[in-house]
Picture 1 (spheres, one colour):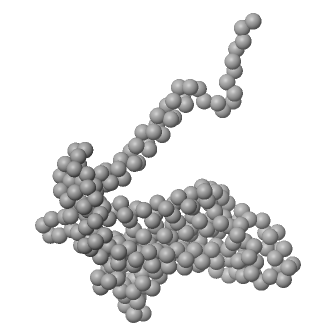
Picture 2 (cartoon, rainbow, N blue to C red; picture 1 turned 135 degrees about the horizontal axis):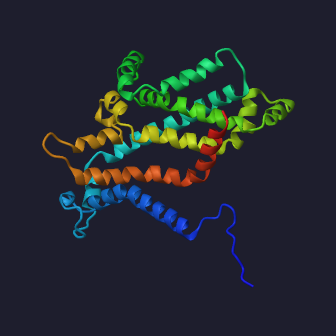
Picture 3 (cartoon, one colour; picture 1 turned 180 degrees about the horizontal axis):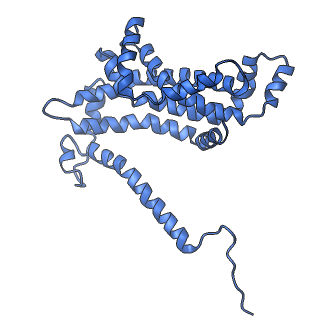
Length: 282
C-alpha cells in the first residue's frame, strides 16, 4: 500500500527552506562586509587602504601608533565616562517615568508622554544651538555633565515609551502585594518591579550607551578642550585639510567597536524579550 506523506501545517518545503537560508546567508554577508573591510584595511599598514583587496603586508603598525602615539586612551576614557553616566542616568529616569505613567494616573500624564514623543521628531541640527545656549548659561559647556544631560535628553523620551509598554506587561498584583507588605511606591518599584523588568532595562541600557558612545555632532559642538575629546571627536584629528590617515581611522574604529560588541554580547539574551514585550502593549 502506497502512503502519501502529508506536510504538517506550517512546515516549509525543502525549496522554501533552502531559499530562506540562502537569503539569510546573503543578508549576513552584506551586513558583515563593511566590518570585515574596515578590519582588513586596519591591518594593512599606513597605505594599505590604497589597495585593500591585496592579501599581503599584514601588520599591527596602525594599532601600535593609535595606542602609543595618540591620545586615544584619553578619548576612550572620556567616552567611557560619558557613555556610562548617560546609561545610568538615562535608565533611572526612563524607568521612573515609564513606571509612573504605567501605574499611576495624574494630571498631565498624556501630555507628558506626547511631549516625549515630540522630542524625538527634532533633528540633531536643530537642537545644537538651543542646547548650546542652555549649557552655556548653566556653565556646563566642555564638561562631562553637560554632554550626559544632552544625551539623556535625546535617549530618555524613546526609552520611557518603551519601558512604559514593558511595565504594562507586569501584573499590577505585584504592586498591590508590595503595598500590603508596607512598601512605599518607590520601594515597590525598586524592590519588586525592577528585578522583573531586567529585559526591558537591558534594552534601555544598550540604547542609551550606544547613543553616547558613537555620537559626533553634540560632542564636537560642546567639547572644546583636547583633554575632554571623546572618541568621535578625536577621530576627526586624523583628517587634515589635504590628507586623511585612513589606516589610523580604521584601526581606531575597530577598537571603538569592541566595547559596544561586548555590551551587546552580555545583553543579547535580554534584548529580544525586552523589545518584543515593550512593543506588544502600551
